[in-house]
Length: 416
Image 1: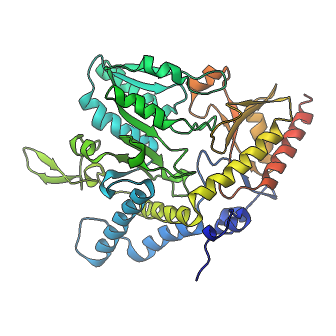
Image 2 (image 1 turned 90 degrees about the vertical axis):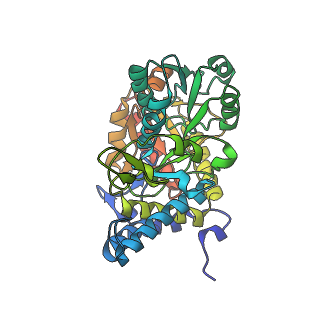
């Protein structure tokens, strides 16, 4: 019987790295240390090969022909929906809409549901820690429809002020948008409690799970959310892949976001009717190869075991936080305890984060610096930018040791 990674008690990051050709690369003759996983993850060989195999053996458009290649492509594309649905605990694979990313998924909800169901005076409640993707679409609807956009604040450590939630909810609240895990602070928000409060006033709940789906198991049916979005490229899948989960009755009632080929059932010169789910929302020729790659990424994650992935990340997170906390010249943002994913944002006092990131890059260490598409949260924390390191299943303690070594050298260079 073939042994899989899940047969082991813990993940072996050194063995896992063999599945990723990119880690054979050197940056300025230094081994690549990739700590920018919250932006996008690297792709295992199995995902790359799945895309390559499609183009070499099966390439044809879906739903448009009876020939063998088209049939095989259609089956592979549909199977990818089924893999994602099983991975997310959806009741039906027809509740999974493939998009380019979480951003497009939120826009689909904003246009397909919000534009046709919200009216002047209605309210949408989101949090101050949302990614811009879950702020700007609702600002658009505020401008178009006259809705009110309300924000749930965080405390000085970056935790949501949950005691203020009931005060912000009312019969006017039609949707609550909540980020599951912060891409800046790593904080995992208590979705069950938030969803329970939202349902008391009859509001729909949209979960931005871009930073949580790659790291631990989520069951959308058990969770009870109405919509959930994620980006495939943050979970080992190709770029330009993502998905929207929506309750079937909502998706059936909503209007399409994009119009044209394949999303129709019939077209006459007078009118058109819409295709069945999920094709109703997947207009035109989709990213077939990318979707197949997404399915392969789900297979890979399942083989590793999601419970082991988050355990590995939390071990790395604890080790890194303990190491960084020894330095008074480093300011770390966000709660120091509680449930978190492997994300740390910090600044070296007196040094611009872009300078820190540049020095790290000279040593082959890839991190993110900037506002991380969360400018309202940055202002709330009293900063403009930060350095962010984010871990995933192929990172190691030794890589963190190298990070700490270079940060010490950065302090020396700037004579702090």
